[in-house]
Length: 195
Image (cartoon, rainbow, N blue to C red; front, side, top):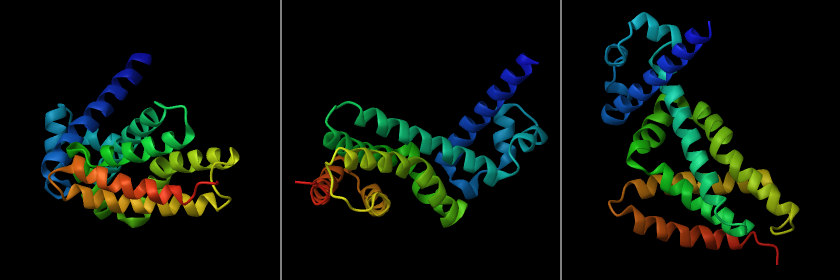
């Protein structure tokens, strides 16, 4: 029984990795479940057993990308003990992670189009915005930021970063554009600082 569970988990992970590569290379509209099943060496029925349909496997891949970006953000933020620097590091890491070539199409193009705005927002709140909100709450308890609504701050900052990621992704020299965006973000964050 244990072996079957392990094999099932490995099959699911393999399907997700293969699907992710197809979604990156071809975009959601041009990917077929038959191609994914063939490359994973499983039947279409086996694929449907694990994922209801193409949208289902895409949602799982999208969630995988969100988790990876959240982990990167948290890892980069943790590189400093200063709460302000953690917030800045986390914002920078989000911009960097979201515009990586292997994330752009899934996260920025197909994600909103395939999943719809409501699902996209739920996923964004569950992963990206959750970390931001927790950091802001922590900083507010330390009396480092003004007593504004953490919910409102989280949505405003998350919305700004989601929009700026789209802007950055349109540029060839993304490192320079990220620097420009960070200058603006840092100045916006300064407006929240409790002096």
